[in-house]
Length: 313
Image (cartoon, rainbow, N blue to C red; front, side, top):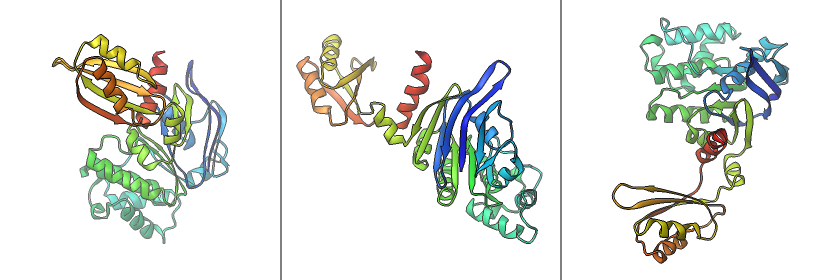
């Protein structure tokens, strides 16, 4: 449904997108991730025919975005990061206007608007002025606008930006329901949110793809074993030395807790429960354990490794 091949976008001497290639198949929900300035929004604007590429190609539903942009837009629903709604229009009035612009027949407009309002949970706001809505409901209106012509493909750029936690949960549920019958490419800085709705992620850094795959497989493929955090007292150097010698430990970070204890964070390259070995190492060094926890690396850990640590290297 979405095919991107060697896409490049330059602004003068600045390379915003540096030759990326990926695809999103029919029915997939894919997260498009990256830090600020990675080229995410620029890529999405090219995909939605709002900006031309410098080189490379993009095909949406088999159509070239550059040469058949009007046909592409008929098949797309796009929600930009800053929702461009008209604050002095009523919700229903605005959606009817947008539906007509998107080619919905006059006889079908009412049904299309009703369906979009229902799916986005804002039917009760249909008579309200958009400018008087909360940020969450304006975001819902933006989503209703994106789907009012019932496109098979949705491209959503930061759909929960600026929302409070309760609003984010509701919009996340909405996106998950839309993904049941549409192809969705979703950009977001909230990685747990993406992990909850996307079956695959594409991570970009400085305009280049650094990872593409299912979140859990990417984490495991990058050495995603386990993390163990232990708070202990005792002689710091002795305890640290003992912990570094724990079998399978690949990384150790130590920090003061401020009350005479130290917190040690260990990374292990393999899955498994390493807590007993860690506790025994502290005891051998003459220390006591106050707290001991174990966790599995997350998509956020992988994201930081690929975008922060590599950038600093």
